[in-house]
Length: 550
Image 1: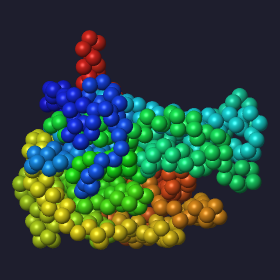
Image 2: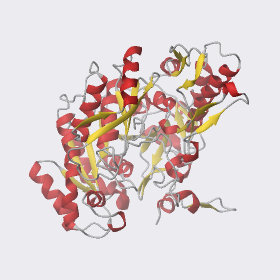
Image 3: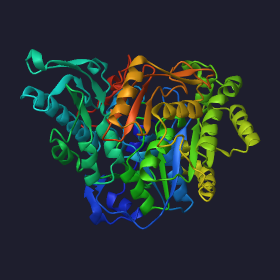
Image 4: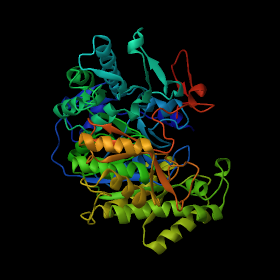
């Protein structure tokens, strides 16, 4: 059966019953029907253990990280542990693109999967609206006399849309007057600064502070203009106030899942909101969360951005591996990943070993590798991975959460509980706050990616000088690069050697409080494939049953 067919056979529990499992009163819910709600409650009294699920560099179809997170949390419940999920929301871009939705798969899903994948409780729309409200206020200010003396060719804040649309990468905006016409572009909502701000904000007051600090443009004399200067803060906050509240749903097994916001990890910081994670930690003994794509992207940003800002410290890390991804990194083409190939598995293991090295020797955290099992995997292929890790002293557990749900991750859950009792006090960041911009970039590139060094374009060099002049050079960094490779070239699979990372430019995110380092050819607005998922979706005229959504 497909994911949506499995989901449609589940009898959902009333969300009020799910709330009680996470020690939340139904009176603290804002209901969105019977099976979805927003949490309008204070932190609880628990001090839960934080478990981060990350992965090696994935195939184009992903690696099942969210599926493993859901199955692991269900398994913890099965062994009588008080566990709940803190996950990101899906973006419509991948849903209608090539990757599909982000609600797990098989018997490890969060439900109702159609609602979560499509619009959910309106959070992405609120962010898109607030973002584009600010854009309209910028252009209107210029049109209405330009009291702040904004240089229309130095507007930094761009419109966004929660869809993949390459036609919007370069646009012209105008108010029917030559003096207001300017070149602009759209980003996907998941890459917008508003999304990042929402994920890092502590509360409404902090949200407004961060919104006010957004640098939207420069004046003709080079002075920064902020959203606060445009008096845009409160109107944006009004649009965002409900979206700031986390959402409560459930897994197929009835495990509580707090799902909130969703920046991409390849072009943004890749983690759900601090508010949601803290809520689960204070209402459950174990919080299972994930960060986007591989450990070089999502996990690095979870540690160096989210943990730095929030003070959170993971107790354990789960590294998800698939035999298919190892074969891809071992030189097998995408069309042959289901064919047994022990040599390719062996050749592809260097990619996994680099991610293990990063977690253990850069961030110094307890970890376990889990092989997310496919029906096409052979025991010979699996034994190659297990044997290598056993020789290294790294725990390795096979899971079958897609086919068995929580029952397929019981052994993984037992290992994770043991890891959570280990010492995580040696955790440290990849770089220090006081490091220079180039030092921060080079430390991530060399320590986490395994790069030889970093090359900067003239544009990047000029931007670094400008950032130092503005006095924001001590901000942490978010590196935007391909998810498919440790390098900034998606074709360099495995564990590339003797490569450099090329920084083409750096963008200031004053409200989010970090710098976005653009590497390689990474774009902030994805495009659709030749045969996107959207063209294979149907909805029945009478029953409204949806097919093709996965």
